[in-house]
Structure formats: structure tokens, C-alpha cells
Amino acid sequence: MNLEQLLTRARAELATALAARRSAQDHLMALRARAEDAADVSLEETRAAVTARDTADAAVTAAQDRLSLLEAEQTRDAELAELEQRITSTTVRRPAYDDAVRTGSEPRTYTRDSDPRGQGFMQDFLSGTLHSDFAARSRLERHMAEERVHRGAQMDRAVGTSAFAGLTVPQYLVELYAEAAKAGRPLADICRPHDLPPTGMSVEIGRVSTPTNVDVQAAEGDGAAETNIDDTVISVPVRTAAGQQTISQQASRRSAGAYDITIEDLIGEYHTDLDGKLITQATTGLSAVATSVAYTDASPTVEELYPKFAASSAGVSAALLNKMRARDLVHVMHSRRWFWMTAALSANRPLIGQPGITADNIGTNYAEVYGQGFAGLLPNGQPVVLDDNIAINSGAGTNEDEIYTLARSEAHLWEDPQAPLFIETQETKAASLQILVVVFGFYAYLFTRRPHVRKINGTGLVTPAF
Image (cartoon, rainbow, N blue to C red; front, side):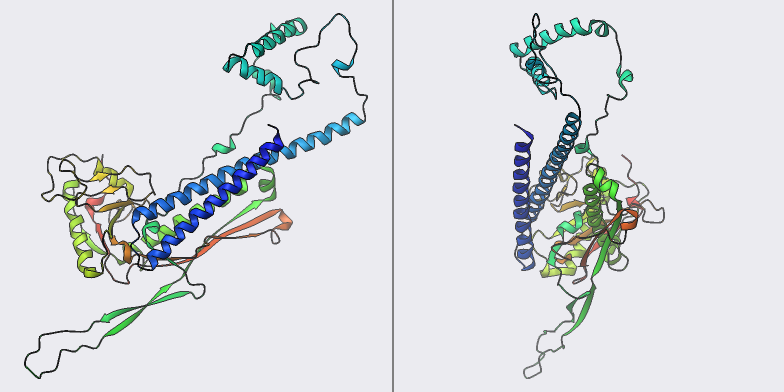
């Protein structure tokens, strides 16, 4: 298969990957639309859709990288062919080995004319060593005999790569480039999604602050109980997340993938920053709006921490009453807290059994990859989500983390379906041969449409000891 055929196949693979990614994104958006319309969309459906979208993204990136490498090779081949033509047009061409008349000798097995790029030699080497191709082995043995005749003195001498500093070329494995690890957006992915309205810098929501009243009629003819209903408008600000990077033209044009890697890192940082703000933003973030459930303990244990989950769940349930949906409650914690809990050993067991939790276990670990939905279940059957955007320097000792308990149906997140967006400009940086890239997006969030969030905090949540 030649290079042109490989390019055709790579372009077809990229087109297929793009179509699959578009289909996965459309499916995810459809699920979000159903959830916004109050349809009962399960976490498993959403998690599967997010996983499918991310898998399709990775496939697009891989296909794009393969196509870019092949196109670069095609460009280099064309440059070398043009260079070779210029050189040979000004020099006397020596006849090919097979074009010259000779007597008393046979042509070499591998020559510059018959195998200019060494592909025949490499194919014989692989076939002879890996697939036991006897014909290939025979040609290799004949080649070594020829080398001993023509270069026997050189073959008897031992030299290392240091003798060929200009020929021992380092190989840069661009496809194995290690991107920066990000905390991602685990909390954002379990929030109730909404499309951000196309205009305005705030989202206004009404909330009943004074409900009506119904009571027993004291006596016949007395007036019915009456309390005038009243509401309060909640103004949710639309926030702007943005980041920029200036890339030189040299890095963009002369490196393998520097531009794409930079864009991917900016996108990852955009989502991580958004998720972090949902937790730590002053006044409106989870930590700021949550009601505290204190766990104070100089020698904390998982058994002593566990009742606090029941306390926080009771607080959420009392706040939402009949407005809590089925399978709505979730606990969000730092991964260090979860692994500390999974390391605990005890002879005690819950007194009340829970669906899906065996009598011999205190909770269940799903062993999911970070950022891919629920990490597991607590002994009461409630799910756990891990999010390393949670601060680990809280409290008086600046070494505590917090655990949040919330209802997913009341964790609202508005996002532009196309976010994050890109701005690329070369005009303002043209004089210095630079490209300015900006990644940005608009979003809004709200946890207090019905105030309910609880957080477990205190000295019992200091850096865990394993």
C-alpha cells in the first residue's frame, strides 16, 4: 500500500470518527433536553452518553494525528523529489546497474537503484526474522556474503553509535505525548443540565417565599385560613470563563502537534475551572451555600464518620420534602477521602439492609475510572461521586476537605451547547510572528432554587492516614 492510499484511508477514518462524535454529541444533548423537561433520565444513561462522547472525541484526535503525520510525510517526500530532480538535472547520470554491460559478476542483492529507500531490505528482514520466510532469509544471507567481500575490513571492526552522531537520529514519539492531568468536571457532569439562553447576563428565577395556608375551620361559618402567597426573584449571574495562549508561528508550523496540544490543554482547563467554581466560588458555590454537619474528631475513623452521612441526608430530605426525585441524592467527596474509606476494616455491620448491598459489606466500590460517574455506594445505598476540585486546605489546620450532600435535580447548570468557543487572531501579533488563541464560554449555575445542600466538615476530615 503506497502513501497516497494510506492518506485516502486516513481521511476516510477521520470522516467516520467525526460522524460518530457528532452522533454521540447529539444523543447527549437529547438526554439533556429530556432532563430539562423533567423527564426521568437515569445517571446510567447520562454516564453512558458522556463516555460515548469522550470515546468519540479520542477517536477523532487519534484519526487527526494519523492524518497529520501522513500529510507531513507526503510534503517531505515531495520536497525531496524536487531536490533530487534539481540535482540530477545538473549532473551526469550514471547508468543504473542493470543498464550497464558487465561480464564475470552478478548484481548485488540490494542496490541504490533497485531498493533506493531500503524498503526491500526491511521487508526481507521482518519476513525472515518474524515469519520464517526462507526466500527472504536466503536473500539476507547472500547480502551478508556480499558485504564481507566488499567491506570485510570494516565489518571486523566494532563501532558504536557514538561514531555515527550525525546518523543516529533520536525518535520523538509524538503520539505518546503526556498531556497534563486535569481534575475535570465530575460535579458538572451530574448537575441538571440546561441550555444557556442566547442573550442576557443573568438568569432570573422565581421562588415561593411565603406559601399559602390551610387549617381546620374553627366553627361553621368562620372564614377559611388564608395566607397570601408571595415569591422572591433569584438572579443568577452568567459567568464568563476564558483562557488564552500565544503560540509562535514556528511552534505552530514547525512542530508536530504543538498547536493542537495547546488547544486541548486549554479546553481541559476550561472544564476544570468551571467545575472548581461550582464548588469553591464565594457566596454561590457548594461550600458557601451548604449547611454544615460538623464532624469533630482527633482520631477519625470511617465508622465514626458514617453517621454524618445519615445526618446530611436527613437534612437534604427535610429541606426538599416531596420535591426530591427518586435516586436523586448524591454525596460528592475528594478521592483521598473515598480511598481512605475503602481501606477501613471493621466487624460492625449496618442494622438495616439496603438494596444492592450485601450483608457482609459496608458499601460497594464500583472501581470506576475517575470522572466516569459513580465511584460506588455507601452502606445506605447512596451513590458517591469523586471530585478532586474539592479543596484540601480547609479548616483551621488548612488540611481538611469537605463532603457535600445534594439532590441532582436541584443542582442546575446552564451552558452554551457550543462551549467552549475559540478566537484565533494573527493580526495583532503579526509583527512578532505569533498567534493569539483564546478559549472562552458562558455558563450559570444555581444550588439554592430550593436551599438544601449539606456539607460534612471539621477536624475529622483532616489529611487521611492509611
